[in-house]
Image 1 (cartoon, rainbow, N blue to C red):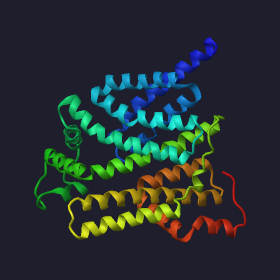
Image 2: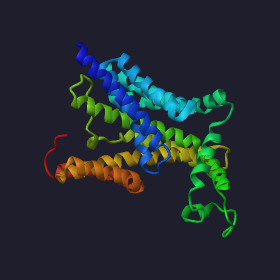
Image 3: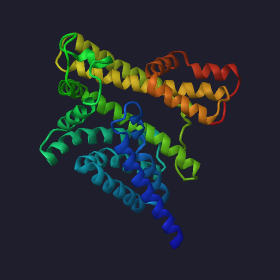
Image 4: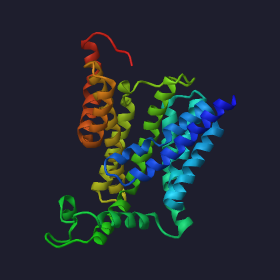
Length: 325
């Protein structure tokens, strides 16, 4: 590699690392749009596959340094535990030209384990639970918010009774504690599959020699997998109805996973319909982001309808022929 090319690559990896860290700090507390942080591993995966492990380590090192300067040890710990495993697993699978589905699944499992370890790692490193930091951040957020408006009034002990930012932070943190298993499961699945699709698509665009990535508009949940998930949900529901301890959270977690999976299938179905309507890539992307952020329940319903009625297959049969990705 020439000196000029090495210099360009160095600037590229430093820029990626610094930008990723700054975006994490800027968007972490931003409602609705902070879901884009799930894509944080994607540029590092691309660097690893295209440039090699050394350049990826440099880029991640820059990101960790910027996070330490702007957010301290906790920001570094969260980034390292939640981002690096996804980068390593997906890049390794891409380099081996393995099946993309299994790459995403393996990455999701690793991220889930990492998320569980993160909760303990924060306590080991700081002597405080991660929920203490969440409560502190929420207290700061709520101190600048109208506590009498909208959803905040629903958490009052009695209607009409004032609620302080401190009380609100305690109430919301308690909800976080209850929903933690569901949140870890859904976020790990999101991180694995979204980064697999995003990184795989861009790597293909840049000519990287990786296994074929199924076009997103063709993604579908296998029938056997859907039946298996629904069977587990029924077991969780029965356990909850019989009052068995812990099954309420099992059922909530399973329903959260099902909601996410069918929302993704609904999004793929929507993308297919928009492609058949000859909509531009920019318009499709904007509408998909808007729908995923605001109308996720409708996407879930569309995903369930696709699973039952095979909407895309019927459209394809009606118009006699497939389409290019």
